[in-house]
Image (cartoon, rainbow, N blue to C red):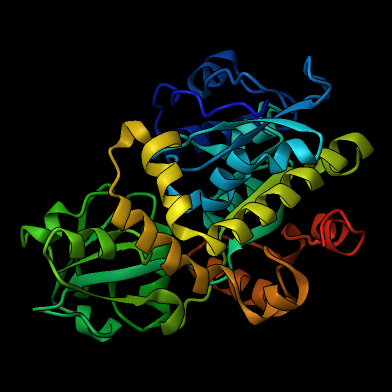
Length: 359
């Protein structure tokens, strides 16, 4: 039977973990204390067979088990991994969990991470390849109160914007592409909380289009939000990563293709029934998070426009077209992440769709 999501691992600073991973090069091993901080998953990405005859592997998320990972939740619930011959353990992430060293060490077969962080890990020596992108259009947005809306980047000048430590590279690049001096906008460091905006401590917040605006609206704080992608900063997000060496291993590659096939089927099922998907997050996999059913349902609906595009309709979910990759690489470089197109590959997705793993 497909494994349930276990309790999150003890925290370790994501930035320090990525830096530590870069020092180690991630080419051979990660120190035991780092692996301990990452947690010990019940599954493993090394070839193995569960008692059921299914191959045991792990999928590492970059955040907690909510509908940001709608496809994963539905794949678990509907047995899509099992149908691919896999017993998948899904490992929750969070602000202190870095998927890159966990995947690079072999503790997870596939990981979901943010694009800038995945690319930077590769630059630091992580032997990883980006094999797909859930969000073809980054959900990163600037959220403000509808009573004092920030309508465009220029409206941020003279204002105070909440930016998390994780989002600083994106923030820096966004200012640059819009010709705004960093000194023209005051930044308050916030970590995944809408309260500073609700309380009026800040004028705007860098958040996820399918999360913070909906949360605030449901709290009785009407909002306005605009996507960074609509103002000169196109970028894919929630990318899938795997070890480059596993892509060259026929058995591991087949398992990776199975994970991606199940994820795609899961996202299809999520968009077909947003309410059921939200219920899984609220009442099952993310029960301990005390999520709002209304918010989670609205989030799934908001995500569809970011996941389903003409390109993915033509080629399949997660497909990264040459133009999409080129735009993402340009945006990453603006933020100081020296990404290249060679970090991205559709080879696994080509097998999933072209070779009939799923139709």
